[in-house]
Length: 140
Image 1: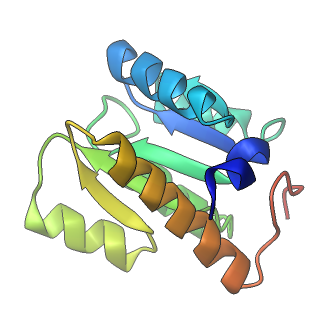
Image 2: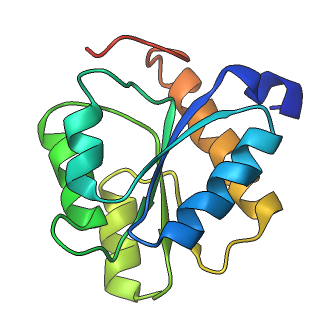
């Protein structure tokens, strides 16, 4: 996916660290993406009635509903959103669990811009190949 194709993507960034949210939002907006941030898994899940992202960037370790719980709830509800997992702790069991539940990528912090953008491209590309709704789709 060329960067000009990213202009219409809605990206949800879920991380309890405000500095991470702001940095990712700046990066994604510089790439012409509509980046919306959420401080918790619960805040993101509650937004799904009004916001439907093309891709989710999801931190694993958060208080309350953690990233694994968010990913599990999305799957249980049949909401097949492309998910890019980010974490400061690369734990083999967590990585395996995230990938087995459908994460498109698993990236360790600190994130490299090129790697994150590539993971988003891949995640959205997977969405298109699997015949899922394209950008700005309505909730199923």
